[in-house]
Amino acid sequence: MPFFALIKKEVYRFSSIWVQTVLGPLSTALLYQLIFGSQFAVIDTGLEHVTYSMFLIPGLVMMQILLNAFGNSSSSLIQSKYTGNIIFVLMAPVTALNMYAAYLVASVIRGLMVGAAVLLGIVWFGSFHFEHVWAILYFAIFGSLITGGLGMIIGIWSEKFDQLAGFQSFIMVPLIYLSGIFYNIQNLGPFWRSLAMLDPFLYIVDGFRFGFIGHASFSILNGAIFVFVFALIINLIGVQMLKRGINIKH
Image (cartoon, rainbow, N blue to C red; front, side):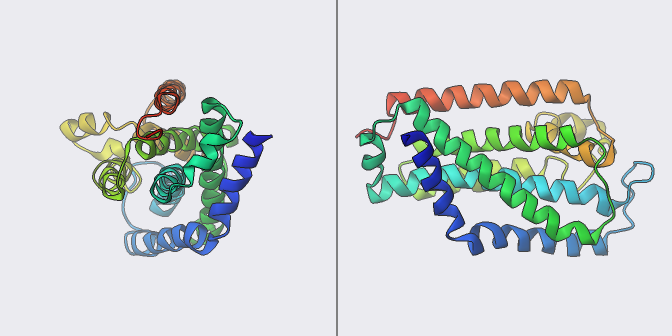
């Protein structure tokens, strides 16, 4: 089936350059852990029986999941548009919905693969255990669906590489870095805490971390609902953009 063939193509594309797509994020996460986890180990997380290293590791894992799910779909689309080989995908007997879903599934696969690799790589730098496996899986999958969908939207919209790079550098990366990866949001002052709560990635990171340490800054149920609705909205927008052929069919 064209749907599964497209998934296979996308998975092969990123797995064939695994040094860049897997080892690169792993080395980045290791550097963050060595710098922050070791040098700032005495930082008070504000959580009982939770060291800074235990707090940091889930955040680093989720950071790479989000960035790589976004990078997979966005880079694949913009490269295909730039080289012109996207015409072969458009000519295939596959609907816009199936095409979108295939790219999205491949992005989720890459996000989860990189997340698993990062977790296995930095697990030796801190002691932690799995408190709620369902939360780990839920927020990892839906986090990948959200940023994979955002990658689809930006990949469809972008006509040049610098448009994609601009969105990633000035919107995606700052929002992810300020989502409570390196600090407990509850330790911020009232103004900054209220401002941080506008960051949608905050609830993904918080829910994912809850799966490891059993502590959450916000209601897990509300966070899970928000993440589900956000993923649905983002991907409905992406599907409609692809169906209309915005910056694709011309």
